[in-house]
Amino acid sequence: MNETREHPPAQAIQAGDAVRVVDEQYGAHVGLVTTVHGTFGGAFVPSINAVFVTSDATKRDPYGLQVERLSSLSHYSQGPSAMPTPGRYWENI
Picture 1 (cartoon, rainbow, N blue to C red):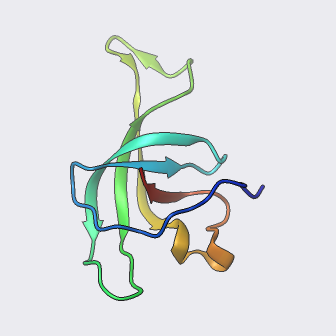
Picture 2 (picture 1 turned 180 degrees about the vertical axis):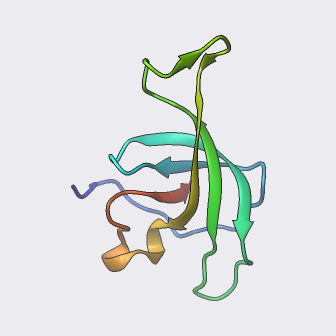
Picture 3 (picture 1 turned 45 degrees about the vertical axis):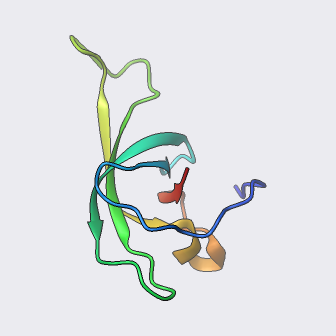
């Protein structure tokens, strides 16, 4: 599944920043960066870890919808043909 939206170039981020994350099923979420693996420089864009609120209504607990985690997410620009497969990437908001 290829998206038709425009994908802006990566901008430096840090823990605590909001990003757009796309999961394995190509579900888009607003995520919170928990870790940046490396430093931005030249063409290198580091991978990140992020958390987001699930969109699956069946994943509930006494606090509400559960939090999910994705780790070692590559930026969209770092994937083959600019698309990590399947899904699992991040972008700036």
